[in-house]
Amino acid sequence: MKLIDFTLFVPETTKVTIEGDVDQALQLKTESEVKVWMDQNGTWINQGDILIAVQADKTILEELILRKEIPWLLIRIKGTNLILQHAEPTDWLPLSEPMEIGVDDKIANQLFESSEIQRADVPLAVEWCKQHFLIDGEPVRVAANRNSESNPDSWQLIGQGWRADLQRQARGGLTVNRVVPSPGKPDGWSLIEGDIRFVNESSVTLLLSEDNRHSCVK
Image (cartoon, rainbow, N blue to C red; front, side, top):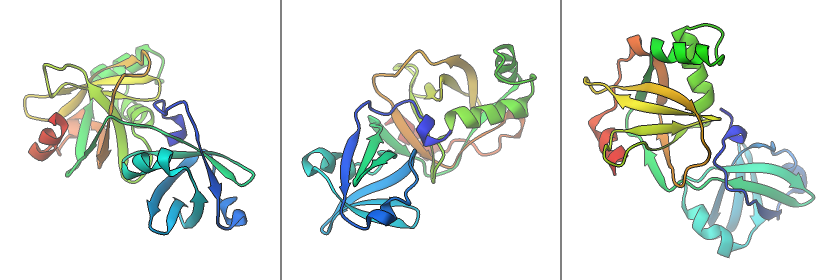
């Protein structure tokens, strides 16, 4: 999923004014992710090899920029202004080890019956999950919230129009238990980032480590 397709951005936009080379700023790709930060020399926008100095209302941006997990999207360039949008997770969970999420025949059948994939095929279901839940970037990210307050291992991924309930198997691995159309935006959500993969359930080899389990429970 491209960041522009992520559904949890706040509705408000943020405007910053280009201080540096306007021609260089025009090389920025709109509807794409940018990095935003402040230092003793000012406020900066970065995308790939392009680094632009900008003016911004620090009273609005400073607290957000200090949260390095916040994703920023460059919506458009209007004159000498860059129009940004951001998402605000209530929690940030960086993973210390790879996390694999198994997809099995049950999910393939469910997606086929919902006309989301052409046939009940696990590899197709794996690709569908990647496209709908993994947010492009480095590192990969997913949005999630707890599906049950009474069970710290019960999580639900929030994707592009869909949600996926996760279930921990007795052996310790995670699998998708079901996928459902998203009912709307949650009140709060966590941004989990790291080496996250959807895999054919039969090939799951790397399980969520004890360290990652503790980080998800916090």
